Amino acid sequence: LVFSANIIRNHVALGQIYGSIEPIIQFNGPIELQGNVVVDVASGVRIGSQQDAEDGSAALISDNLIANVEAGCGLYTFGGNVSLLNNTVYRTKGSGICIEASGDAVLNLSNNIVWPAAGLTEGLDIQRIGYGLSSTLTNNIFQTASELWDVEQNNAKLDPKFFDVENNDFHVLASSPA
Image (spheres, rainbow, N blue to C red):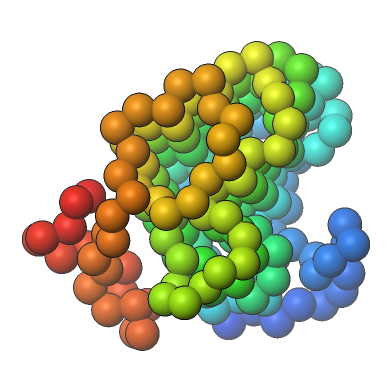
């Protein structure tokens, strides 16, 4: 399944699931989530299931913008192999990216910007839950991350210098470390 080039904005939560607000988007099985914009929403994006963990399903999540999610993780993955590449997640509450791994899962997070709103103290920018076969966290910009990574290289804990967060313009300035 490929889910790409969609804009989801100003979504209101409809119900409860997983003990919290229902995810705005949920996919199970192999998925490519590419080039989407999810902004000013009540809940985040959820990828994967226990069955995906058992099957080793793969998820490619790239070139997405997820910003201003009111509850939970902006992007939550659970299960099989996950590659997160070139995404921007701006968090105003909760955690930015949450990855739950187990078994033979292979995780690769590269070239992402995950940044909290000014003054936000709850949650982590990148939160890994559990252990998989291998995990790589490289060339990302973030402030806080869990410490369960097999390889952690060339990450920067520097302000990405977004153009205008107040108006949801998450392009970076020429002086950005990105």
